[in-house]
Image 1 (cartoon, helix red, strand yellow):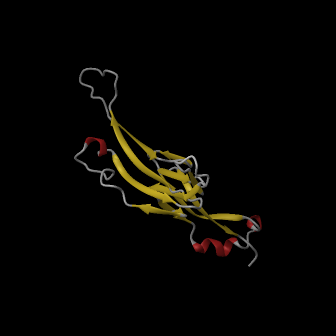
Image 2 (tube, one colour):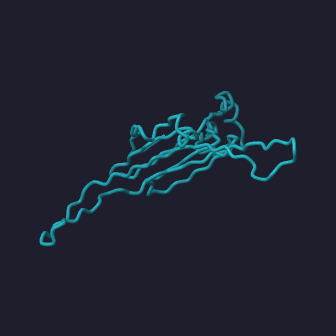
Image 3 (cartoon, one colour):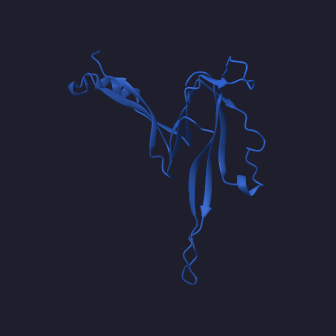
Length: 173
């Protein structure tokens, strides 16, 4: 999901190439450009939706305990999310190089951010007993480049995060 932002194609040096060691852990990568207005993006890794069937709401209209309440009827879960709210770009000031010239020029500022999800496999560094093999562990992390805005991100192996949900008000029929 995005607001007041557009997706940019990744440059060729940012695209994952499985032959290079530095890009082997890149799960995905995206670039975004924010213009004059404040913008936001929400990235979800492996999202899944759970919902309450519409047949629930017919009988629930007659329950007194739900009158005037809101019911969560749709939930998006994911193991990892990245939310980003851009800096209010506005304009950047360009000062003339000549000291005699007083006017300043203002150019529209463009904020760009590159967000990637990367994995890293590590092995246990402590020595193990003879015949016991060290089990590798997988860590997945979010990385952002050139970000000046506010961000919130997390990742776990289970889909425990709920960054999106929909509410429905229960009122008298």
